Length: 183
Image (cartoon, rainbow, N blue to C red; front, side, top):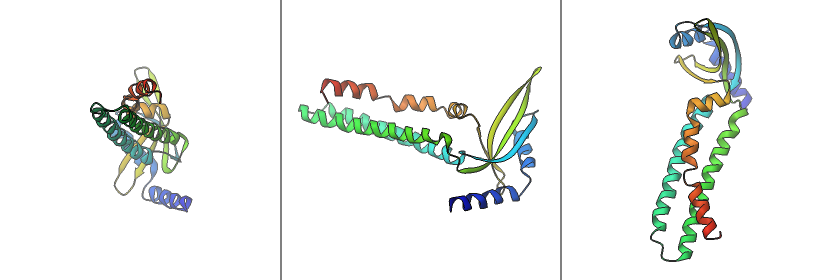
């Protein structure tokens, strides 16, 4: 069923207009000069992964806020048993953050979105820099959504490293508390 939907979506995507013309419009919006090398129908993780990244960002922030609240409540704990409960709850939330990031990173090789692979050269003085990206073209709205072909470049573009720092913010504190309490 999913393959049929993707096939029909691909037909809708490419039947409305010539993909190469749309790609030239897209590149003309971004660059003054370029040399188009290759265009081919493909599939990748563009729309899905960008949506998942936005959700991951929000979930990470929400869960870190929950951990911070637990730390504040922990200061009011009167027994060691209450302290242990706060630490265990914090650890559970921290583990869920790690799981969300692992799920996101497993998307590296998934290819659910019909798109176009585009390879082009950009002039930079006497040299030309090769660029490759996946491009989703919504023919009905002329909307372009792109991402670099290289997953690591894509993560840099998303500033994933900043999100990782946010995700692990409380990890050391939780591990130290678990160690002190022998949990």
